[in-house]
Image (cartoon, rainbow, N blue to C red):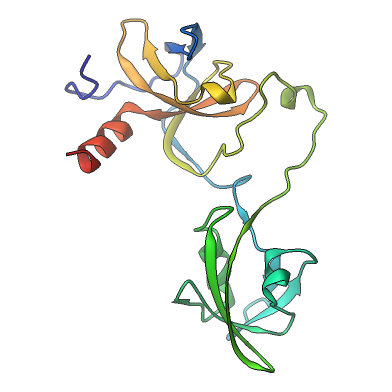
Amino acid sequence: MNIAETGTEKIEMGKLLYSINAADKVMRSVLGSTLFNLPKINSQPYLGAMVVYNSSPVQFSLIKAGSPAEKAGIKVGDELISINGKAIEKASEFAPEILKYWADDEVAFEWTNASGKMTKTFKLDRRGQSVSNHPADKFEGGKSARRDGFNAIFTHDAAIKTEDCGSPVFDWEGRFYGINIARFSRTTTVVIPKKTIVEFVTKHVK
């Protein structure tokens, strides 16, 4: 089957879908959303530093013990110059710049203190995940480590295990709808749609 055949399958809530895992087991589900963006929440990187509100130059106001910022040698009162070569001139630019990155990304910080200009390249950490005893958070296989920070995705209610993400999604007529990419909750699996896949393949595979 040519997945790039004309047209894009219509993302309609309530449509019956089917997923096939690595063991060839067919799982039925119901399409649960239209296309939407799922911003970074659990996938936000952890620096362990805060800056003084509205400061310019940007001054660090809090450095958490054991954080990447502390390990890099950044201290309260130090003034940030740049992140990966991008100048950070006011406090409002700090958080949006950090949120462009992911846990385990390497970042180069440049800052000043009483000793002069400092530079250090280090990795951002993962944020600690809250522990919940709610039944909705207790299910076989658990949630995917990365389950947000996606654009133009849809969801369905198949109980896809994390190790089965990457499996295809079809409708009852065999039309390809997308690929399962993350288990979000007990009742929700995230799918990257056919249109996005086709656009990526067309752009990057010659």
